[in-house]
Every structure is written in C-alpha cells, then in structure tokens.
Length: 103
Image 1 (cartoon, rainbow, N blue to C red):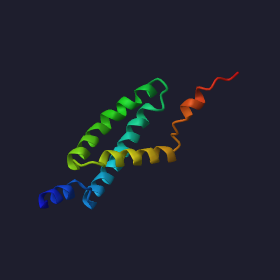
Image 2: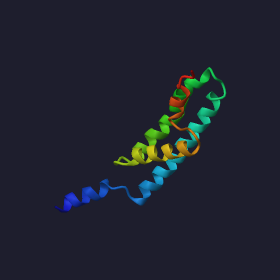
Image 3: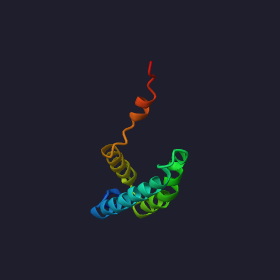
Image 4: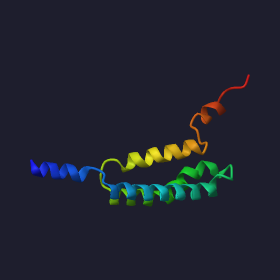
C-alpha cells in the first residue's frame, strides 16, 4: 500500500511542475506570436501561418512534455492559450460571422 501512495504522489503536479509549465507556456506563446508576425501581414502567407508557428513551437512543446511527463501540462497549456487568444480578440466565431451570406 505504501508503494501505491508514493506512485500516486509522483503523478500529481507539484509547484515545481506548475512553474515549469508556466515558463514553457510563456515561451510557447512568444514563439507563436513571433512566427505569426512574419506570416500574418501578407495575405498569401496567412495560410502558412499555422505551419510556421508549428515549426517554432514544436520543440518547446516537446521539451515541456519531456520536463513534466505527467497528466496536466497539455491541458494547462491549452487553457492558457485559449484564454490569451480570446482576450486578444481571436474569437473562433469570427469565421462563422465572415461566412454569413449577405443578401
């Protein structure tokens, strides 16, 4: 029973893990904005923006998973990015609003 309690304690996110996830989330957001800044101004390159962001943020994502191999870092990163994107005005319904037919 003692072995089970020890393994369950190692699976929880500790304060050190949360700080690490926060640092990597900030780096992820910064690199995503840097890559988006190169592709977004040009209307032709806008479609390549996700690929450019993935090339720069992929190594950061993999490093975060290597440093914190527990359940939760991906969820925390996703929630933080969703909040940041919503606050900065990148609302997902804009695509539906722009597709509305004008009669």
